[in-house]
Amino acid sequence: MIDIAGNYDFQKIKDLFSVLGPPNKTLDLFRTILSSAEDNVNEWFDSEFLKAPLARLASELGAPPSQKMLAIGAIMMAMRHHPGMARPVGGTGALVTALLNLVHTLGGTILTDRAVEKILIDEGRAVGVRVKGGTEYRAKHGVISNIDAKRLFLNLMDDSDVDEADPDLRDRLERRIINNNETILKIDCALSEPLRFEHHNHQDRYLIGSVLIADSVKQVETAHSDPAIGKIPDSDPSMYVVMPTMLDPTMAPEGKHTLWIEFFAPYQVENSQGTGLHGTGWTDELKNKVADRVIDKLADYAPNVKNAIIARRVESPAELGERLGALKGNYYHIDMSLEQMMFFRPLPELASYKTPIEGLFLSGAGTHPGGSISGMPGRNCARAFLQNQNSLTSALKGARDSIQSTVQSVFETL
Ligand SMILES: Cc1cc2nc3c(=O)[nH]c(=O)nc-3n(C[C@H](O)[C@H](O)[C@H](O)COP(=O)(O)OP(=O)(O)OC[C@H]3O[C@@H](n4cnc5c(N)ncnc54)[C@H](O)[C@@H]3O)c2cc1C
Image (cartoon, rainbow, N blue to C red; front, side, top):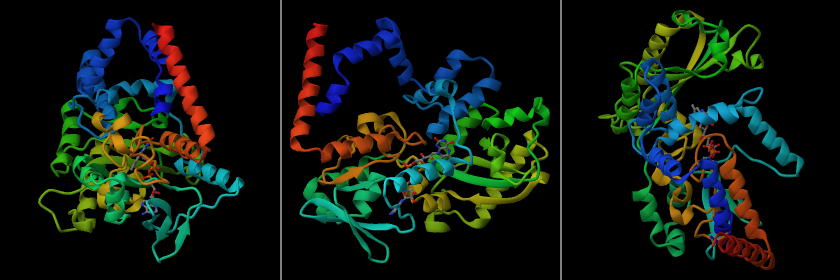
């Protein structure tokens, strides 16, 4: 808390406001944040041709564009211009490989092929993990978890260990964390040639970025509100399309291309409880039927897509959840709604990357600042972890410095 207070001293808050402008401008920004992405897009644009894909982009946060307090999705579009988006050569996996190399260089070992089944607790302290098959790994300094808080505390720990540390935690995780049932059906394709958007003044360079198929703001609204009630919005699919090989030809044989399509879909399909994979209603037949509809729609825009597909792999929301180890297929671990962001993420008592269990730390998309490939939850958690290793003396020194800087800034302000 002292460290957080140190980071947000009066001078820094004053500096922030001075960048934003005079009080009315600042208040207006807060007003915008409380509004919806749709409100925001309507305020600035008139043409549906522009508004629909922008609404779709804003809704990448995983909620309909009309949802109040999620205008931040639209505000984030500014970040796509500055600092912009980047992709490592070789694909996202290349970033992971670079991080692996770093850990190896520093003498670390990474094991990825064994699932943790239990966090080992000894006298209230996390002392290691047990993986599938029974092998135990003991921790010298502590255990850092990168999965969502619900799975961590409700599935990987004894209830009594959690209750002893915080008697309310299990109940709060169970009832207070929000998951709106929206996730992704993913289609990966190998292509013999690039897509051609013949009705839209096609130029290959358009394929370097992400392509958003969104005809109207209403269509985008349905694409995100249907999954919440278990409906599959495939009667008129909206989608996000990326052909990574246009920017990075190293990812496919010469002249060939890869394509992935993100289609928002429910994890639990309505009226299908208990059937399909994990009782979600998703079967091979259903996922392929939905994928056919999505590709039909894409063909309205890029008529050569069907002939260009050499092979495809469709991953249903249930399969995606299984592959990622994500609860209900939520690749953001928990929803990215405002009441679950910043110091509320995932719950106030877990928001500092530390947990009520000594030596157990929480990181990943389910912690601040949330999902996406930013590296920030990991960086912040590493800081909290390292700080915890510090001796009492340096902890006290850190606290003293923070208090001094806060007090100093208060007096300078007055
Ligand atoms: C189709 C799709 C497209 C996306 N596109 C983008 C994009 O363009 N840009 C972007 O920034 N973000 C994108 N995202 C979101 C982004 O991928 C995630 O938010 C991000 O990967 C979360 O990272 P993480 O490390 O916190 O968690 P995860 O990536 O979920 O990693 C958690 C890890 O824990 C492992 N695990 C789970 N349970 C256990 C267990 N019991 N024992 C051991 N290991 C376990 C999992 O196998 C996994 O490797 C996309 C997501 C999807 C699904």
